[in-house]
Image (cartoon, helix red, strand yellow):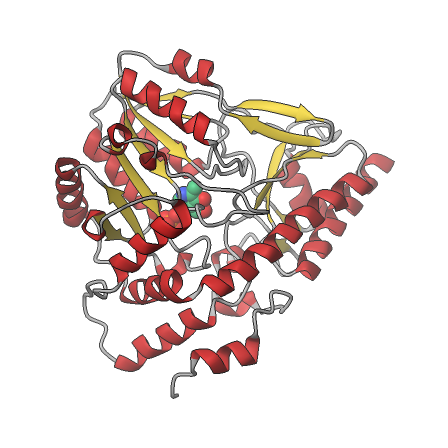
Length: 405
Ligand SMILES: Cc1ncc(COP(=O)(O)O)c(C=O)c1O
């Protein structure tokens, strides 16, 4: 098959985010896990149901057409393209040589924790939080130090604020590292400069190293701004490992390619050596896709973010309109919405996640975000509007049946 050109793909598919793809035909974790029955809709995983950017599809076709798939280095244009992206999108000056290409973000922070911590060291996290970060921190540090985010309720809106007092209170002499997640999964909060400055101050005061998981950085809704914590001040950058990736924004998680920015020379040398000895070479297709993402897909991303912003508002308005008890987030970043169903009169021992899977035939995420996740479920709205609406209607009908007794 000769590779299709970027232009012909764009003409053929446009950026049609309403197109319904048969994801069950692609051996997808989101749609094909054995507990997602055929009659269920899947909204549990941070994975988009849209066709990728035409530039990415073209780059992958060209890479496949080469016909050789040995261990691969990044194209010489990749790190400069990422550095240009960070400068342009995040106002962050990073030299290409401060960027380390790597496989996924989860394995990167897992390794970074192993590298930096010895048993008994304390790892600070802000809960509720994406489960694998909690698990990695607990494995490596043995002492998970949870500093809850402050839950704020404003009418029907749920939002979270950084609780600096809680963060300070969680710090002990054993505290060694803060694992930050920004934009934050599952709350979708995008932390402000003021918050990041204060978090940075605390890290300096207590000599904490920072691992900043910024995998959702480009997924900004309604004009939100992402500020990498390492860009706040050189003193912060010197103690920070930042993890970003094209995977969430450009819908490439199956290609397992991300990058770390480490601006301190000694820390970078240590990180590169430690990771290099333990992690696989980066996937050749992931590297090709990353270049096409950062260099050639800005128009796709802009259209994608506009669609996602509408989906966020659609979800919010739909649930508020039909369920008067409903409280939920309206996230500034990520395509994850955090829904408070703590008010449902569920049977003893049943969770909202189980209820919606069994009674609504919708798979949502819940029960693995640590302290503060009780009663909440996380919904991924990166899906065509028709599927989203179907899922929300199923949820509404399940709740109405439950309330009707
Ligand atoms: C905050 C966060 N970090 C890491 C990951 C996983 O990244 P990867 O697939 O690159 O390991 C996810 C996936 O949803 C995520 O939301």
